[in-house]
Image 1: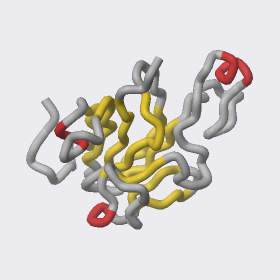
Image 2 (image 1 turned 60 degrees about the vertical axis):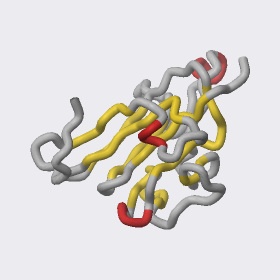
Image 3 (image 1 turned 180 degrees about the vertical axis):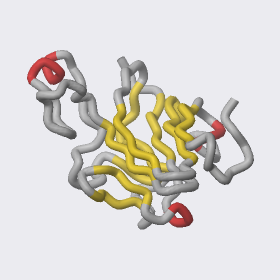
Length: 142
């Protein structure tokens, strides 16, 4: 099947660490797949070591606000981070994610966003990840 859309992760406003991984069994190591998951066709989006396989939205590089800290993708400077996008594009998929949010966090995971649009948020739906009690952004998810 020809890939049609990019799966995007965006962390525009606050420092949030995301670990995209499919291993959810207690016996599986972080950022790794079990033999069964590999045989079933699962693919890691993040290797836990570096940001290979990712870029800033509509760019070939990654803005300096993104780093890998403690085996996690981390937004260390929200003013210089922007949206991240997977290098590969995906049509149908299942996504399993483990994430950590700081107090007041407001972030999300966009999917089926298109690089043809002017902004990631304008082209794909978003799973909102927010500290509903302490986020300082006035707009709330619906």
